[in-house]
Structures are given as structure tokens and as C-alpha cells.
Image (tube, rainbow, N blue to C red):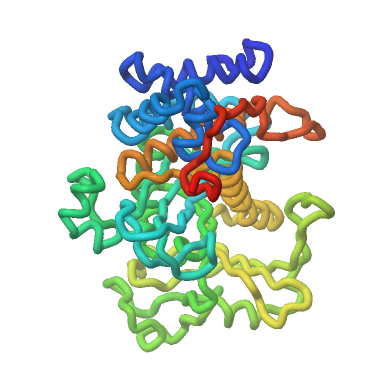
Length: 427
């Protein structure tokens, strides 16, 4: 479907929703699909079902409320087919200015009250920067320097939830969903992306994922290259050194069995001054973003390693001027011949997923779902990604100097006397 064949954003949006409607099954779901996506696109502080119903059907708010609730929480349309359709329609816009360069793994959290929302538990919440009661979801995005789009999205189900049959049943967790760690979910998404034939890019991971040797080993088995954040205590063999014990995988004893292993931080601190170079990677709001970096080829020691299969990869280190010690470390299986600037450029491209989540939450209402069930949680996220995909496609048509507002539609009037739940006036 060519989204440029119609004039005006509202006409293009109608054509876009028509494309999405082809994968929701029954024709009577087309109206709720259109209204839900429209509600997500309209200006407003809250994108939960109740205020969206009031905005999209002010003359019949109660009926619209029930219609949207059923569509997002009960109707059995496929999240996978919907996301595939979004990708089909939006990918050409993303690739207009260049091919896909990266696959980005990340997760996002949603603070919650109580214990009944599916998957909720006390865990780290990035939104709050501390341990808190929240849900968390793992995602895979495709990206280049101009745009990015989530293509896979799944709730992390903690062990306590996976083993609690009563809570699972109440929340509608599918029988085939068991406990998986976040890196295991990420590897599952990467495997799916390879099987689906998505245009490939280097996989970018922050420390929470990059430090997992099983995930790094799994990516290599899928013939994927990566740039993975790691902790400074990660053990490596510097240039000229390697494993002494052959014939079996390394164990967790580390340096006791392999005395030549040293930490990434030790490698960094031993580098000569000439190894460090100032490199800038992209233009920020006020000036070019730049820092000081070094890179060196190393072998990585971990308990997944078969010594005979050791291969060298890049250790990239950032040490900004004025800091007492290096601040960031990455491992990368990108080619040995890659330029220094390009390696830094890809390592820093993870900012796109941070922008995605910021806009998905602030503009499209990703965190505003108030239901408790598995299906509703994923349906709402899928529709938010669909709405965001339309914004990505629209922005691809705007010159770099043009206005990139997300407010494509006017704000409709609310019905007289409307008060959302929780309003002080309503109370």
C-alpha cells in the first residue's frame, strides 16, 4: 500500500488503517480499530480506553467504551499479524534514506499499583530509576540513522507469575508461555527476526543484555554481529594471549585457571595515550556529540567458550575528558576492518530506542493501558506501535527543517458533563 497516494495526513491515516484492517479478521472490528488508533493519535494526557471513547464518540461514550474495551481486551486478533502489517507499510518509509543498519534490543517498564496486573512484581523500573512495583516488556526494533520501529514486543513474565496457575488463568496467560529471562526473550525475538527475513543490521544491546554471554553466543550462532555493552570487570585475553586449557569449555573459576585473563578495565587503563581518539558521532540539539574512545582486539573469556573456537572481537572503550576513569565498555563482532568512527557511530545508535520509548509513552500512550490481562496488554502495545508507525512514515515525508509535531488531528470536543474516573470534580 502506497501511503503517499492520498493528499493530507487524515486521508493517509484512513488508508493506513484500511491496511491494518486486513489482518484483524471480522469486518466489525474495523470501526473499533480505526477509533482506537485515532484515540491514540489525538492530543491528550491520557490514552486509556475511557478518555479515548469520550473523544472518538462523544454522543455515545458508554457504548464506545464497551466497544473499545472488547476490541483491545477480548477480541482474538493476532498481534504478530498486525505488527507484520505495520512493518510492511512503514519499512519503505524508514528505508527511503538508507538501509536498515541496526537491530536494537531493549526493555521498558510500567509502574503499577497492586498485584493483579499481569506480570507485575517488584523489580527494576527504568522509568523511575529504582526497584518498584511494575511490569516490564522486551522489544526488538529495526533502525537506521533516520528512523526506527519496534517489530517485536513481549511482556516479561516473572517466575512467581509463571508458576501461579490461578493468577495465570485470571490474566489469560497462554498455556505455552513459561518463564524466560529477559535475555532469553531477546534471543527468541532475534531468532524470529532471522526466520522472518527482516533486513539485517548489527544488534545493539545495553549492559543489561550485552553482559549475558549466552545471549552473545546465541547471536553469533545466528550469524548476527553485535555491539554489546558490558561491565568493566568482563574478562578478556589481550592481544597476543589466549586460553591455555584446551579440549573443554571454560568454567566459572576465571583467572585461577587462565592467568592471562584480565578485566576490560585493566585493558583500558594499560592503553597508551596515543590509543585514545576524540570522535564525534551525531549532531545534537546544540552541537555535535563527541567523546574520547579507544579500541583494541581481544578474546573474551566466558563459560560458554570452547577454547578452540576463540575468535577476536573489538573492545570499545569510552573515556570522556575530565573523567577519572573510563565510563563505558562494549564488545563487538563487527569486522576487523570497520573504521573507528563507524564502530562508535553504531555503538551510539541505541539512542533511537530511547527516542522510540519516549514518544510511545508520552505521545501515543504506551503506558496508559488500565486492564490486567495478557491479551489486552499486548493488543494495546501493538496498536500503540501501529499508531507510532504511522507517525514514522509521516515524518519520513517531512524535510529535515520541517515541523515534526505528532498532533496530526484536531482535538474533538468532549461531551457535556464528562468527567474521567479519578477526577476530583467527578468525586
